[in-house]
Length: 392
Ligand code: FEO
Image (tube, rainbow, N blue to C red):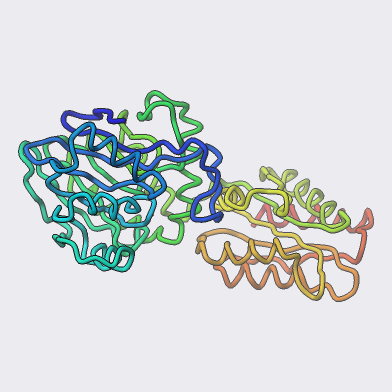
């Protein structure tokens, strides 16, 4: 299917309604996703990105029907990760001489994926190519989020084809943000940022500042996943600027796992203490929660408490995995605390505190632990613990 999103610029992507996991099974996609490819029918016919390879035939058929693959003059690959570049090999097998405009890193990665030496045209930030009424201007986005990433500005149409940036894993019934439920869009946009882009926040902050300083007219931002920002497109740029700066919403999140509910009782008592001092709190059991959703919750939290009982001198396995994800995401400006019950050795809360500290969290309190089932007095100490965290 092709839908004109702006004069001569068409969406020619795929809606993957049924997708429930992305990056293998690393990231949950409760609302599916889209692979947004675009076609510009100017004097030159330009394909911007492709789609994930399972959809290559469907994608190529639509192109053939609507424009004819032999009529494509150039392909721009903003990012070669297989969800966007996966069908490139198939398209190139149909017309191998098409020039591919991409960054140097993009060409290197394409060669590693496809083992072909196609007609690459290497572009850098500020390079442009005239395609008729429009010029395409390229802006490198190195490590946002791959070494090859870039965006393409369609000068004359004031459209930014931003690839992953500003996207969401969200299969919507309309392509445009102003037709859709804003809560759903933002829930998926922040989840995308939290899970995929958080480690690159310092680069994103700088890139947003660079792009805003150019003062380009921007009437539409069309990412490669989810909705196209047609109404007030700069709203998502401003959101990214906020999210890139040690973002939090001021509340606490408690994530724990438990064997016989002693650690659960501590979690709830700590939450009471936090709330008594005015800090709102959310509680999750790690082992029955979606890990991608937990990372989103951590991204939004000011205070993260992680609880685990001790087993075999360490934390429960789901807490171990979560702590490793937290480390890798390089969250900034957050407060952390560990707690948990134990039977004899009791290492888990200390391990949690140590790993959170190594992950950049401020750890203001000693870890809290109680032997077996906490007494009423010990639960009162949990409430005190929550109150102390609340006023730090
Ligand atoms: Fe949507 Fe980095 O691929």
